[in-house]
Image (cartoon, rainbow, N blue to C red; front, side, top):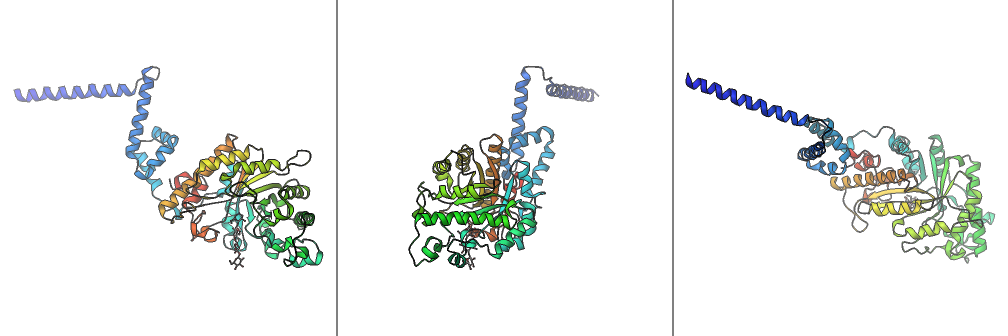
Length: 444
Ligand code: G3I
């Protein structure tokens, strides 16, 4: 009996102790906000949440938690432990190629973030094969090859006319008609370039066996060519689709000197000034005139100096924008690239990413398309586009559009380096979701 009584007393004592402890800890959590100490309390709570969060996080997502603290903090504030686990599991379990595409396409995402022109380059094959995808994701197109000098200059007609004659082939009209039917805007690419330009345009009687023409003849040919080009687009009813035109392409070497070409050899270094002078004279006002180049992060100040030299006699700028091709690698510095975009934007000119593709690795060492490397690529696209959107918001850059150089790895000029948003089976990659600013599916 005595023993039972002692047991009863002990049980009552333990229960009372538990109630007191429970009450205290509840009180601790109920301390009102108006106490100074509470600041420390809140900080402590946050850090313990952080510890909890890190404990819970799967290894794959620890990087995400570090980088996206705002999101995880919000989650921690409002969700229980079980819910956090559930949210992270949902994000973890996906096969990127089977995910549905972003509603409204990349163009919808960019439009909502202030980037007006979202483009891809097209050719006869892709408009037949991937038309729906192009229409869904882009509002702008660039002809990959079919508006380049070698495509639109006609030797037979030039010989007959004694002037350099522009004559678009049927395939170019087909692309322009397709763009028109599908309400696309067009970036013109390109007029004056050292590459994909027929040599006969530089010779007397358009005959490469004869001597090169003199400066005045070449300037007259250049003026006639540029004039005819814009007249043809006007006469055939395409001119309104064009919002930008690459007047001169790739004229600066990586070391900042002007690239050798027959344009430069015959006319002199001011051939670029003349090209812009004629384009400014003959292109309608609504078409922005661009200088377009690659590797500009290595020659930024030279491109800026060139752009700033393109003024008429009254000091008016003959150029409207600088195009950055962005044939990049996942090993390239986004910081450095952004510095170039900032320097170009500081000129007051419009800036566009005109040919983006991001190959795996570096130019010295191209990497295989493993899941890990493709995730890195997805993150790269996410970070680069995000940096541009943020820099535009804070007025550090004036980037008005982004054009991808191709619709999928299978049709890319760099198909051996997996640089685009869709894979060889036309399935979306991490890079698609990264470019479309869906961070959860971008490989993070
Ligand atoms: O059309 C012919 C075909 O008839 C022939 O059988 C075949 C054999 O090689 O060649 C075909 O032409 C190729 C053409 O693309 C069309 O596919 C050329 O060889 C090939 O050199 C050409 O490459 C283009 C490259 O410019 C030439 O410089 C790429 O498609 C095009 O994406 C690329 O685009 C350039 C931009 O205009 C300027 N910035 C750099 C960018 C990448 O090089």
